[in-house]
Length: 608
Ligand code: G6P
Picture 1 (cartoon, rainbow, N blue to C red):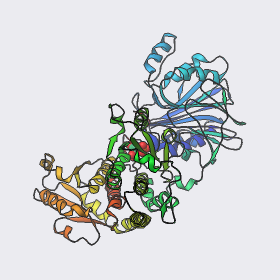
Picture 2: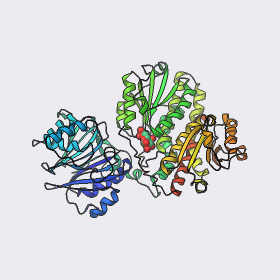
Picture 3: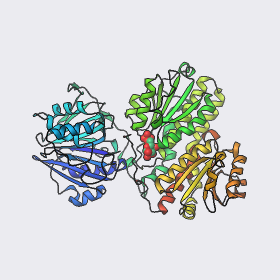
Picture 4: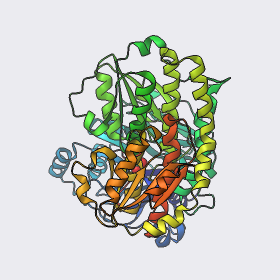
């Protein structure tokens, strides 16, 4: 949800800003802009198109001199995507420029106050108040002005600030929105995430909420919200730039689909030692688990659908009631949560605004918080009592694939681990499940190989305007993710339905040639699902099914089948989601959609 970058050093800033922005485009891409300071003049360039256009209008940045600059790629919240609303925003005297990720919630009050003081607003954004506040408070010391301005801001922000009066400093400040500082040799960077820095430096510094960084060529000083100096340490990133590149694939999404066996292995392997699960990263004990009488999983989007799978798995293994509560709903309910509740928070980015708010709400009521997160040092990771990292590496495509798969892997690991701690499963039963978990990466690989016919299936079905997914139990949980994947990247209307529920209304939408994708891998309920397939076939639907390899009975009803290898039914989702991801990808490709950056979406939703 908006990406920001900044650079200070000896090199020309503009090309570095463009490269960083291109890596952050997944966060929002409805307009973009940069501001570069040269001597005492700030030059801005903006576009309502992609970064490519900024490159074109500035000779790849060579046409803009200056070694200090900030850049922004936007996902519009306040004000339509237009050049006027694109960042950076500049003060009336042209001396300050600001890029912002987040939402200034009290901007209307601040705007009225600033208008009274004579400031002129050029845009409809909430961000513009920040730049005028800075101009208002500046009395010869930028850090002091930022401290004063930040005190007035409510909401969430990561800000990059430059000022023509102080040509040797880049200032960054954050509250509830992500921002990372990159420490190079004689140069420094700011960015919304590591992917935008990694080609220049692997040494990073994480800013805590409220902290302000004064970034100079010679080094970085950090202050707390009152302006007092804070000691900070740096962290080394342990992955390479290739992880953030397409490596020969047409799209990040396909690269990330193909990376899933490796990613799931990276999640599982370090936590299985001598046939036992070791979750050294968390401190939950058997006594803690015995104290839990309710588990609530909260998340948004695909992460919540991973949670839907988790519900079936954890209830089965732990015999503790599990609910999945969408973070955007939980945060405004009056939820029944207390010190006997374990809240499992799932988030790839660790920065999703609704998920953060739900976490706070539950924590405030006494819940113990375990989060499953991909981005190290993210807000959710920091706010939780325990964190399990998914170790999926950077995920760039807006539609998640390896993020979801690694979240499932952690849910299984935690489930088996907790089942043994609680004494719900014997050591032997757990050992068997652990072996099955270790086989998952290979089974995912087989599912990828088995499904090379999906290109043909996509050609056959990509013109459908409305598609229903049906399933029971874990098949149903997977159908939610399959349906979301399809609709978000191919723009085809699609719904996931519990197969037994279809006849209570929705079956009236089934008519000739309507495509129903029937997930038929949960074998205990296979016959029930077959009856549901018959119901839709009888009304003229075409049926594309999933099934376990070797199942020929499905061929008596389904028009086409996508096979997957056999797994422990509890871990089925990890394998069954593979053909659904591939189908969504090829259908979107056949429909000419922008697969990695679907319209209206952003990967990291840091606003409500
Ligand atoms: C966006 C992304 C989804 C993701 C959801 C939650 O909608 O496009 O892929 O599942 O946000 O994001 P999180 O980072 O919290 O997992």
